[in-house]
Amino acid sequence: MSFDEEWRQLREAAAMRLNSVPDGPGGGSGGGDDYVVTAPDLKAVGNEAQELFHWFEADAFHAGAQTDTASKELDKDGFLTGSAMWTMWDTWRTQAETLLSACAHIHNHLEDTVITHANHEEQLVTNFSVSLINDHFK
Image 1 (cartoon, one colour):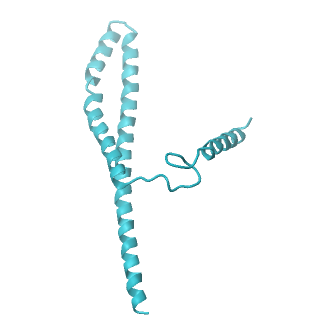
Image 2 (cartoon, one colour):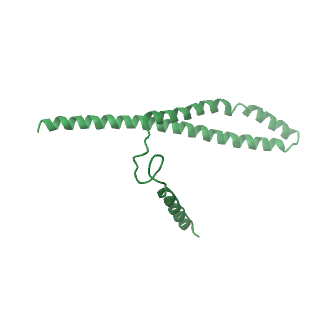
Image 3 (cartoon, helix red, strand yellow):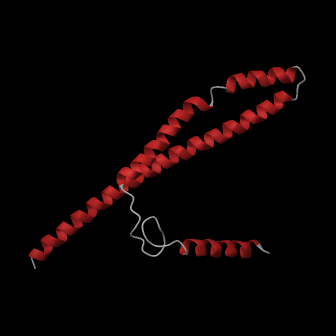
């Protein structure tokens, strides 16, 4: 089976699963008006991502220098554990940096979403008010 064929089948299966979710509170397809996210909701998620970022940033890398020293000493003494320890640390560091980046991205995106939405709302209210004024001069 080709990649395109497999991808098409997976998309169709996902669409069928999504379309089978019942309408109503907590449900999904069809109505579209049963799911509401407010600016405070978005801010709360963004703040949680920012808290996780700061907490994890402070704690994720404190063992780096000690791990480096220990792995070099083990290598020097002929133990293969030293290079394995360094590989483990390098993998951890890379994954930790990825998590930090994701947390920052989530926080920044949600902050921008809230601000952008507020600006759009303000523009809509202003435009609506101007159209009402124009109606009075007709």
